[in-house]
Amino acid sequence: MTDKVAFMKPRHLVRQLVRVAIPVLVAAVTVSPLANAAGFKLPTPGTSASITKAVTSAVTLKKLPANILPTLAQLPYDAYYAIFPNSCQPTCTWGNPSASKTVVLFGDSHVMMWVSAIEPEVLAAGEKLQVISNAGCPVATLTPYVNGANPGYNSACSTWRSTTISQLNAMKPAAIIMAERTTDLYSSPNTFTTDNEISTGLATTFSALAPSGAKLALIGDNPAYAPAGTWPGVCLGAHPTAIQTCATKTNPTDPTAKNHLSAEQSAAAQARIPFVDPTPWLCHQGICPAVVNNLIVYQDWSHITATYAYYLSGVMKTAIASLLR
View 1 (cartoon, helix red, strand yellow):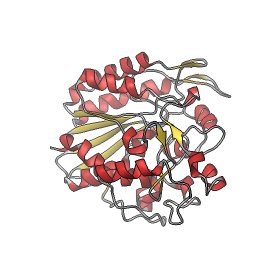
View 2 (view 1 turned 30 degrees about the vertical axis):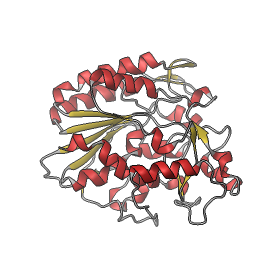
View 3 (view 1 turned 45 degrees about the vertical axis):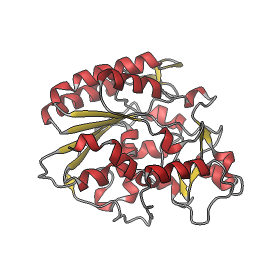
View 4 (view 1 turned 60 degrees about the horizontal axis):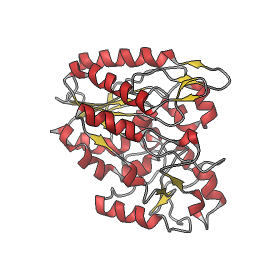
């Protein structure tokens, strides 16, 4: 399954589809994120101070802004492959093909989610950005169990991960930035993956990447969108004058929406690699609003919009600066 499918499908369909593992590696194309061909308007990137202020104010916002970005009609398609030119769909390598340094994004669909936040700084530094991604396959060394109509262990993820790590070790990129979904992840039938399994699995992956010589970094999992029985666009369309109804929380009651951010942070600290916690860019005092300024934050139950990720490109620049030196 491609990451494009993962962005679009609800949870119960994703569980059934992620057993098919297709790695993503493509030829080089030089593009600008502003040169999108699908009618998406991208915001001016925020500063740390302005984002903090906007997120703080967003928890009291009542009405859906008239100039909302993306529009509710665009929201189902608001992902990296929609805001970039058609020649760059569905996946890409960005930047100068002959650049002396390559930055690799490695992970599942969550690493693709951060493309529009990371691409501007990598290209500004004159480097090449390459994506190696497989939807539903976490960075942590573990074999996810898929519940649903076709239950079973997704052994293809383990094969893909091992092959990719060997490829990265041979490639020797300047930096490898990783991200993964940790919500709604199972280690056996109807048994959620534990913090220990995540942290141990990440430690194994970090160690396996040592021969690459690359600087490593991990972007932590974002809070999932958890209002029961609905998706962001559906909720906002139904409650345009009461959009706090559509907010989610950093500590949801729905067990499928609980992430393993603390385990990721612990693993990164143990390995002494940079860790980026996106929560303060999304949430204030445990509340994660569906709209910040005039921007819709969540694209679906698991991913933030490419539009909002681009808004975060300024703070992401600061977060990954040490990797680009």
